[in-house]
Every structure is written in structure tokens, then in C-alpha cells.
Length: 284
Image (cartoon, rainbow, N blue to C red; front, side, top):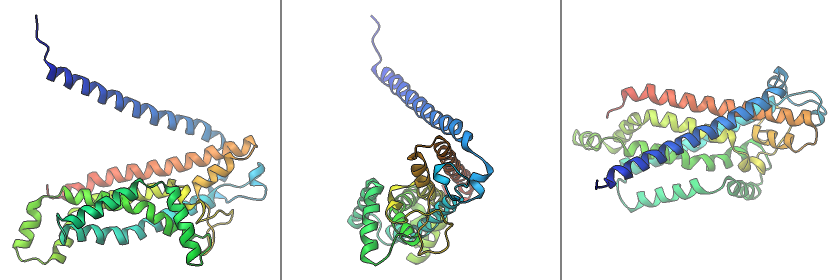
């Protein structure tokens, strides 16, 4: 009787499970894209992307979501830049000045916990912070709150990139007499592809987040004019339009969702291309 090779059987089972998981992910993505595209094209027009809402927009009259597109881009850009001002020095400090001790482990644990916190919790925290500082719903409040959401994404992504960098790079740099600050500069250059990718991924997350800005950025039909004024965003525009009983407005909600999907996919593709291009100059 032929003996069963359990190692090969286990390997075949794992490969089959991975292929099923891959197929499920691809099918789910295609289902989302096909549904949003099919329903979104029905309400898409040049007016949708070139004009802010006009009077009666939410009962089916003219206008578009230019205010929400601009607001989402401003919120995501501001939050990503603000988070980078904290994340980059923090990660460089961990790798250049505090490598491999309990402080590093504690900071990574804190970032992992922050990553897992639902964005609605950040929205509630931002609302409380906004009241404490005497702010009102505005672009500035939305940027600050959204920065908390994207901070762990940016910091942990950059941290993982630096963790994968060769240890010999650190030891040889210090052996040549470089200071810790110079080492931080070399590590930042080494992590440039990952840093750019992390920035784009954080930007994409900021584009699609609704809960964090629901209480802090507010919503308005006007175009953004200042940091102290409320600002619209695409996720909330989709939500408010889908909440109406008018089929024409609901169709435009799917068009707004299609615009948001295209923006996020574009950011993801740019991040992938940037990673491939910049990785050519990285020390392996």
C-alpha cells in the first residue's frame, strides 16, 4: 500500500487555499467595480465633476459634486502632510537612536492599536478636541482628526520598510564615523520608495474616510474657501445623496461613488508604479 506523503498533501492544500483566497479577493473587487461603474455611469456627466451643487440639487435639480471632490483632496492632502510631520521623525528616531529596545516595542504596539481603532472613534475624539479648543466644524478640524487616522498607516508602513533595510548599512555607516543624525538621513534615503508609497496609501485612506470627518469637517454645498469654514467630502456626498428618496439623486450618488473609486484606484496604481521605479536605487 502506497504511503501518503503528508508534507506534499499539506503543501497542496495550502496552495489550493491560497488560490481560492486570491480568486475570492479578485471576484469581490471586480463585483464592486462592475456594480459601481454600471450604476455610476448612469448618473455621470460633465456637470457632476465641474460644478458645485445648485439650488435643489438634493431633489434632482442641477449641479454637481465639485465641492466634495475639492474638499476630499484638501482633507486628504492636509492630513497626510500633517501626519508625515509626526511619523517621519518618530520612525527615524526609533531606528537611528533607539534601535531594538522596550521603547521601540511600546511605540509599535501603540501604533498598531491606533491602526485598529475605528475611524468613528477618531471622529468622536476630534469632536471633543474641537470643543475643547473652541473650534467649529471646519477644514482645519477635519484635517487634524483625519491625521490621527492616517498616522499609524504612515508610521508603521515606513517602520516596516526601514526594518527590512540591511543591518550592515547601519553598522557600516556608524563605523565610518557618521553621527546618528547622518544615519537618519541615510535611512530616509534608503526608505524613500516605501515612504512615497506610504504617503500615497495614507492619502488614499484619507480620501475615502467618512466617519472621522462627519462631526469635524461638517458639510456644505459651497466650495472650500478657508481652513475655518466647513467643507464637503465625497464619502459624505454619497451618503447624503443615497439618503434621499429621489431616483435621480441616488443615481448621482453612484456617480460620486464612481469618482471616489477612480481617485482611490489611481492613487493605488501611482503608489505601485512609484514603488517599482524608486526601488531601483535601494540597497538590498
